[in-house]
Length: 252
Ligand code: PEP
Figure (cartoon, rainbow, N blue to C red):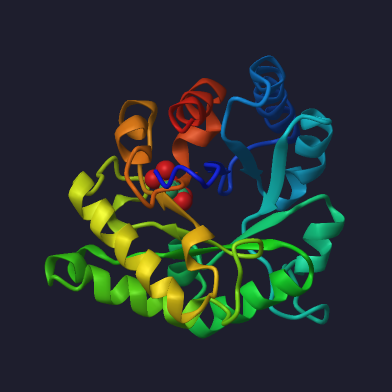
């Protein structure tokens, strides 16, 4: 891991949970955080929007940030079912995931949409976590690095800084499948992302780059030890306090 960058472990709860589940999970993590003090990674929870309130009250003053899973690019308007970045900010969020491959696939989001959402998030004072990643077909064609760096250049607002952007490299074929790229392959893509960041940010060396895709307690240490891996975006394992915490401990 790039030692100077504090690791971030982010949990993407996707469309799972109830208020009771959210209070329980966030409360357990807050208890663990309170015992651990400062010697643990930064933690971020991204629950479904209706559960933000329950998570916010359960984490209390503990060092656990809140994030949304998506936002609209517009400030406000007639967009039934959407939430704006400002609404997430008002609900206590400091971060928002944009461009997750499930959004790109289910909602037809492209790099331009993701760029506009990331920009709206920055304007509202949120840090967007911009997700990029190749499909299995693209990897097998030897195009992973080209695809991912292309997505990066088009999805990340120009002039982003380490304070207002985070990148998540998530190979689409590794999400929710239990499959993980070879460590060398993860390292190669993260190194390429670090270089390509120079095209969109004057702060490339300090931008955190997370890896996501079937991160579990049993593979977290080796993934999080790689250079240019500055944390993880965790789906399935973020729904269990012990697993998520074990990943957080692996990061520090
Ligand atoms: C994700 O949803 O971003 C993700 C990485 O999921 P999982 O950890 O379950 O593969």
